[in-house]
Length: 184
Image (cartoon, rainbow, N blue to C red; front, top):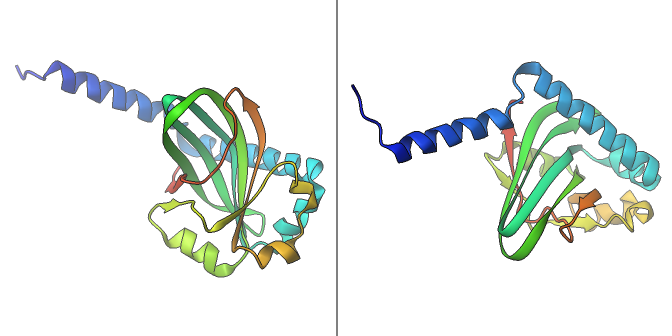
């Protein structure tokens, strides 16, 4: 009989549970992400109608309809979303984030990354794992209705909008978030 150390067995079981929790299995996972992305776009269109111009002028957009973030000194966030080009889903991505510091709480939010140039979109799609950084122009939910594509495209090739925040953790940002292509 093969003897497996208890620590190895527990680590393997925990990893299996984590992976199964993240997977919805088959096409139903993709359909769920697409439905949530549609709902997020409907929400942003109805609450911030001026963002429609961004949507029309963008080469593509990554819609992350639900990101859950929790922390108690160490923190993390995870969500799944759809990359859309010409309003059609072409790929699915996960968003992960890790943090450390004086923080405690949990929240959920949505965000959209608008790729305003073909180069920005191509660079994102070609990467093995893309990390959001200083190259993104952020728009807060308070000014989301006041932005215009003509002024923002001159500022940054990628525009991020965070919206729908709910929870007890102050603030949400996609800076430092790593995006990885997945099969839902």
